[in-house]
Image 1 (cartoon, rainbow, N blue to C red):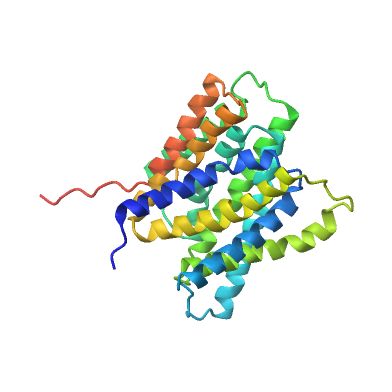
Image 2: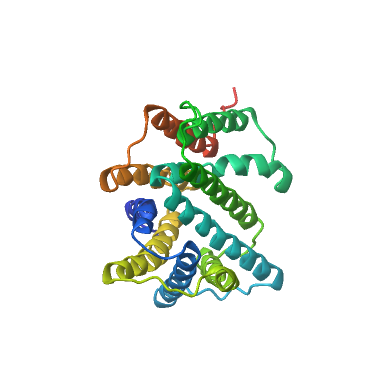
Length: 296
């Protein structure tokens, strides 16, 4: 049975809008980033496993030991990716942290010749240069150097999250498991498990006092922003061309910028806005394939 194309578009758009609101929810959850990453990974993996079971999507494909180890490594990278991103949200604005995070395509372009043996084209190099200029505008460095210590930490943490994100993308290209649901379920669970030793070493004995709204937001972040969002994303991805999914994925940072302005009243400078356009535009163009010329 052919999947409904409109439903696929709506599913991907819905998942991107959900992802775009993560920073807003993070602001109102008084937990450490590591604890939040642990809870998100655990709830998200359980929700995704339940979804595959109830919808009959449970895979019977066997996973060889090498692939399983790689899945676990990627899962651990996802966990630390979340920690860096959640910490970035604490130190700087949601808009700045999100745009730093979307430097990931730039890091992938720079690392792909080393790890994936891909060639650096002129288009990709131009996109890297444009995104770096955009990053200078967003960080505030180009605005007379007016950047506070916390904002600078937030920028570095956001870029750290982007590096982890790039590593996840590159490592995932080496995984041969076709079932996206099974792959992501294992990775999310591994992300949660990887946080346990880190929590034991870093978490203080005093637990944060949580009220009803905080608990509700934690549950929403784990279930809606992880389990439901990934299920929608994979459902929609199965019914759309890869390039359409890549283009729609940029609804995430755009919606994050809009929501941070409307809900948190975060406003960007003129240079910051130009930087946002440069980063998102460069990332989008770098992923779009140019149409081949017809033979004459």
